[in-house]
Amino acid sequence: MVNALVLKPKWQEKWLRKQGIDGTTYQLWGGEQDKLKQLKIKGITSMPKTPTHDIISCSNPIESHLMKIYGKMFFYWTGTVPRIVLMEPKLIREMLTNKSGEFRKPEINGFTRLFVAGVSSLNGDKWVMHRKLLSPAFHMTKLQGMVPSIQKCTLGMISIWEGVLGANNSCEINVFSEFKKLTADVISNVAFGSNYEEGSSVFQLMNEQSKLLAKMYYMATFPFLRHLPTKTNARMKQIQKEVTIALKGIIQKRTRVMEKDGIVKDDLLGLMLQSNLNSQLEGKGLTLQELIEECKLFYFAGHETTANSLTWAIVALSMHQDWQEKTREEVTMVLQETLRLYPPSSIIRTTGQKGAKLGDKQLPGGAHVFIPTPCLHRDEQVWGKDVLEFNPSRFSEGVSKASDKDPAPYFPFGWGPRVCIGQNLSMLEAKMALSMLLQRFSFELSPSYNHMPYFMMTLQPLRGAQVIIRKLA
Image (cartoon, rainbow, N blue to C red; front, side, top):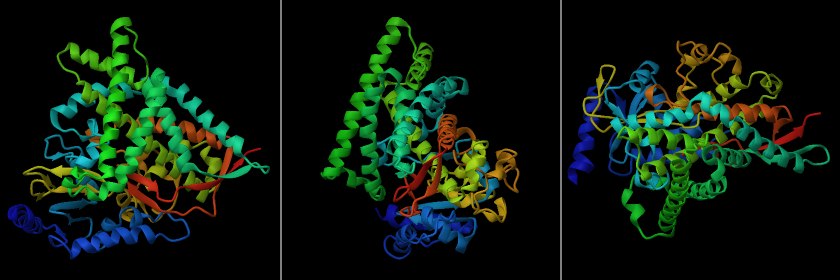
């Protein structure tokens, strides 16, 4: 106990300082850790009333504060674990492309495991096997077959919007909640196809689980708390059980059809099961529980990231209405700039193993390395003096030429071997939906909109995203 709570953290701090990495002082309670908690609270309430893209004091309050003191590489403490924050593009690429196993995905905590695990949480040979098995389902040639489903779902949402327009062909809509419904509809269709209704019921349970997890996330550093007999803990375990039973039924039903008739549906589930069947013939493949975890990941990643990207794109276009006409021709550039300013995740995380090095600095085993993506995407030395401006034109020559650095340190979906497997699906869906919406509506921010980007599993608008939509003539 003394070693875990006092001796080991003190040794790690001494080691980091010896390597030339500065940071906060370890204290078991109070002091620095209390100050950091206050920064998070202050960050939520400190956004200016006039919307701005200078959001890191809200999205990454701790990192934005400490980088002013310690520079582009420093550490601070969460409990007994040092978090090394990294803002050096060269070292970031070195770390994210490292294949030697020096840097691994952190172990997910017990609360998160109740919600979703899957390929994104795996390491080593297990990650290689899952990634290899899932990749065929996300190839662009396969995704093109999902275009009709995306189009159908988007037209359904547009029809609802047109039905609530007032006499002057305008109304206020919370696009965040609308896009969450849209992306849930899309992922239920493209993931489960003919099993859509069953898939949709699973989504409702997963959505409830996400809200409960966000409420409990601050307890993640105290794992024993999830075992307490509270109503929330009991409900989270019940949801996990119901989701597992439902997905198990969907997978087994589809597998029986495949084995009996040899028919493979071209949705994500069908493509994944076909790939898994081929792997099983080679003596490999995933277990039923592993398939269930991957289906849960489809929901979370496919739903959350795209809903957020569309929301922030509409908010940015409402702030910069001159770009709405241009966007009808330049949808990709607008989404790329949106993802620069509002990446789905505010942090990329890895854990350094014993002997891991960043440049010439050796890290203590078990130290967490954090890349605060919104901070990196707002580095004036990298992106230029217009770093806080919404300027999709910076991507006119592609991502690699978008900044003063070559290639641009642009990581909305991660980088290297572990880049998000679903990024092509997310971008395809977002481009289609945004194009169809801008052909029919114009957008401006509602007076009731409160610009508060906040990290809650993903980067979301804390108070919703209220905009005024107007039907184009």
